[in-house]
Image (tube, rainbow, N blue to C red; front, side):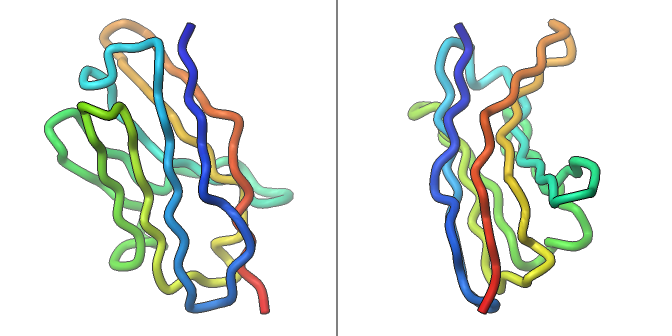
Length: 117
């Protein structure tokens, strides 16, 4: 059974930092593209960043230069370091694991990030 468990969310002031972590189990982690998505109230879920097995990364324009995604293929974890946070970064953040060749796509339960004074 595949499980993706996020942690690290919380309340932070504008300009602050948070680091989200996603621990994966039940899958051959190194073969999966790992991503972070977010969904703000009343909005659609959107891609924040993803990282493929080789370490190549891609970011949404809104977070470039502020967020960094990384992975550890031994510990089966993916991290999202978020700096210079803005109120518009407030959302539930979801971890995603995708392997398109096998038609597999998995989601975590989400972790709340709130950026406010």
